[in-house]
Length: 203
Ligand code: GRF
Image (cartoon, rainbow, N blue to C red; front, side, top):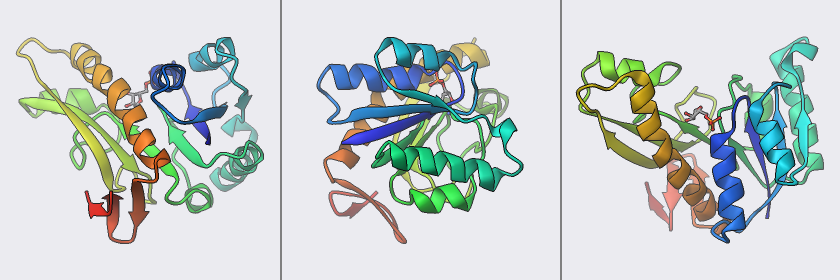
C-alpha cells in the first residue's frame, strides 16, 4: 500500500517507518516523503533510503489553503492511501483534512487530551505530572483533537528536563507509530463520526 510521510524536521519518526518497512513489520511502500521545509534533515535520510522526496514550501503560497491544495495534488499524484504526519509543523486547513479524512494520522508527544500544541514536555514537568507519554491520533479539524488511536506512557523522573523526558518519550513514539499505521493497513482501524474504531470496537 502506498503511503506518504510529511515532515518538517529531523524525521526520526519517519526513520522508524523506513526501518519498519525494511524489517517487514509494515505492509506499506513509502511512496513519498514530503516536507514544507527545504532544510528538513529527514529529507536527506529519506533520499539515502532511496525514497522519493518533495518540498512544497509554505512560504511560496499566499494562503494556507493554497499550500494545502498543492500538497493534496502532490500526494494524489504519489497515490498515497495513508498520510502520516511525523513532526509536520504546519497547521492544516479543511482543504487538506477533508481530502484525506480517515486516512490521516498524527503523533503528538503528550497524553492527549492533555497538552495539545507546543512545548508538551515542559508543560508536563511544570504541572508536576508523574507520567508523560505520546498519542497517535486521527487528524480532524480540531488541532491535536482528533480521536486517539494508541498511547504509550513513560514515568517522569525527579531530575527530568524537557530534553531528558523527550528522549524517553521518543523511544516509545518510534514503536507505537508504525504499529498504529500497520493496524490501519490491515483494515483494522477506522475513523467514523463516533470516533476511532479498532477491530470494530470503539477505542
Ligand atoms: C516528535 O516529538 C513528534 O511527536 C512531534 O514532533 C516530533 C518530531 O520528531 N509531533 P521527528 O522529526 O520525528 O524526529
